[in-house]
Image (cartoon, rainbow, N blue to C red; front, top):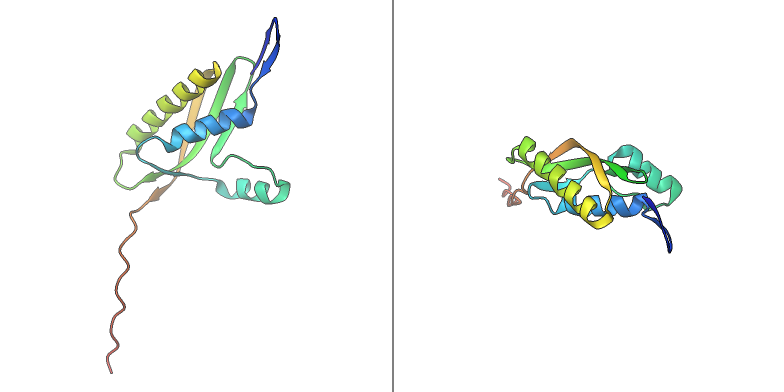
Length: 126
């Protein structure tokens, strides 16, 4: 976002918008984690940049488009949690930056299961 006013220019970087969107996503009930994907992990290793895990943004002067890759908890209705996620991210980014969020695209890349209690080792029969 770039805003020209009497005192100067205000710019909000893509990384700031991605951070806000990522935090809002992780605060949404039913979201287990963000999914970084293979290409993003490779980009981190090659560039050394702090790429936002599971969040891609395109920020214009007045609008933003956000893509999220998520992992949901097993047993949670995916449609419901995805709609709530879209609302939370749109509201958080809009309130903090003043940008109009034109789209929040959600890609569910996995399901997280509760960790099962470790089984006790079976005794060997002699």
